[in-house]
Image (cartoon, rainbow, N blue to C red; front, side, top):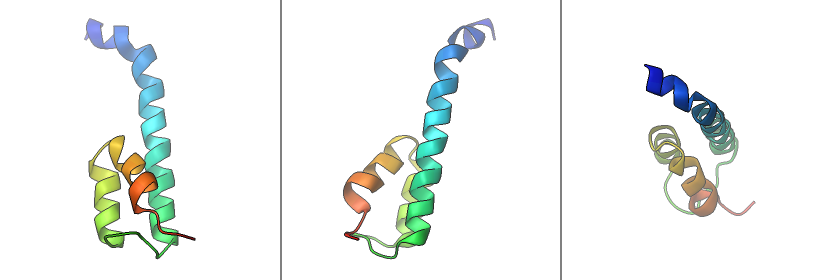
Length: 66
């Protein structure tokens, strides 16, 4: 437990960044029907279950042209 408390100043910003990325990506997935490949359910699962990389992968590869 003491080791966890030692890393808290580093972990809290990383957790907040992950949550902001995930919420932003999920909002975009729900609001926009166009994707380069896959469908809405596919991207929701990627964003939610592949932490940190899921939202980045969506914004780089999944977002369709607006």
